[in-house]
Length: 106
Length: 120
Image 1 (tube, each protein chain N blue to C red):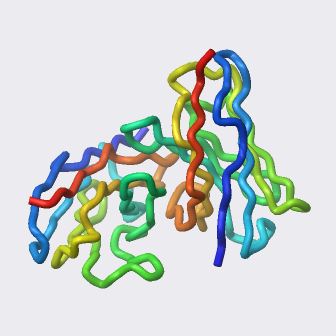
Image 2 (tube, each protein chain N blue to C red):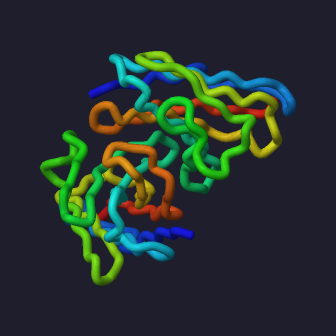
């Protein structure tokens, strides 16, 4: 099993600030990494696939980078609707998810 | 626009079988290069992939659940289903059905989710 470790567990920022979320894999997943956003009571939404490709309809302020074992999701300027929980997920092996990063309003 | 909708009992007794169905609308379940899957989320916790299926019937299961999981497709009804046998309280979760273009991820369409509680 490939374990994904996300950091930080909680990130407190203000609207307009830049958010940087990290995901580290226990072994290389190449670029087979996706990012999801989940708001309370809702299903997750795909943001980024293959490490750096934006999913359909995702605003340009969301970007992803990395390869191998270290990945980053960046939100360039936070909007009020961006405060949510974010998960990374790998598909190099059978799929696993990180434990999530909660992005909260400071 | 593709829509997925889960249905099934919200309460299952311990040791029994959990059965859920996902109805797909706005697209054909038989279209090529689409995989249909199930992901669950225990209350207040993270996400766990259960398995994925192709319309041809090829299945891919989470190794930790494989002995208890069966998935199948009903193309005539544009539906796919999940059976999880011998459930315990640890199987209590919101169950989501999903669509992806790879069997292992990039889940780009999700149902709204259905809470299944395992309790006597």
